[in-house]
Image (cartoon, rainbow, N blue to C red; front, side, top):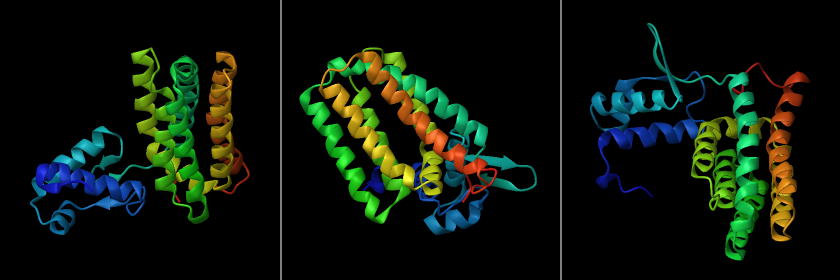
Length: 227
């Protein structure tokens, strides 16, 4: 738990609002009323305004004329483009990192994946997403190209909220995802060719995107990732 005594009020407000966006208590389009949030947090509107500006810079909040701040709507094309980019970037980063992963690194990734499996009985998209990011971060940690590692990390962060909604829309994809994780681990553990590891990592992300697009085209999903 974060020690609120050691962080500024604007950071407290930032974490509070971002947490509610991540948990989807504040859904896309939800109006963020500064006075109400300030009252809830027992602070002035100044740090709340600073927090909202920070969230706007991250793309989680949008300002509308004569309306004010709202939780950002999710654009399907934004999700599709980010997933396509992450598929390429992380596929390469995973392949480059594979020869540098130790037995302990691989075991850590496997433990995280087992934790993901444990969440499936009482599925929580936010918890699953967090573990999912930890899993992939563990596999690319020793990537020898720092710029590539940075690009993957940034794209992962951009997709956090979007992936929450995707797993909610296509819950069956979560079960498939953890199975694919185990396959990637097995390839790394057995010293498979780097191109095979890269292909598996790319197809893993591509399958998540395909699952969403298939649902969308079948008419089961709305025009956005809002739910």
